[in-house]
Length: 114
Image (cartoon, rainbow, N blue to C red; front, side, top):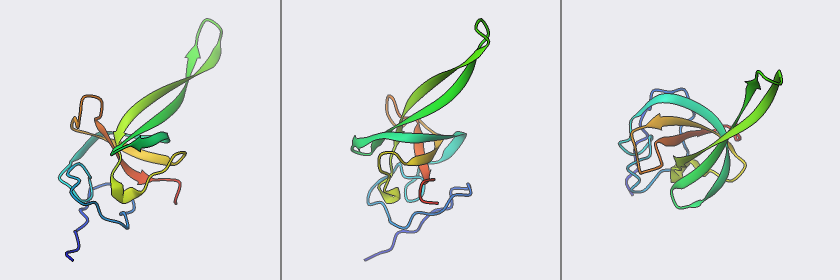
């Protein structure tokens, strides 16, 4: 059995313990290059193959009422098999090239484990 080499992605995150088999979009074991924004969010759904749905909450100031309003954004992200992400995990995602029509982010770390 040939052990797959884990690539250095250039960001200070722990390397995954498992390996991906044939996942070319994994930043650690594939050829996907990361760039752009880093976002932290909560996983809502993972039963979509190699795709996960994460939710980001933010507060926006409403000037008329002089109060803050909670808003949320949902993103479809690529879920590498080597990270073992589950629902309700807090994850760090990073922008990458367009993977599909709706996916252009990939999960790089599970912050719930740390």
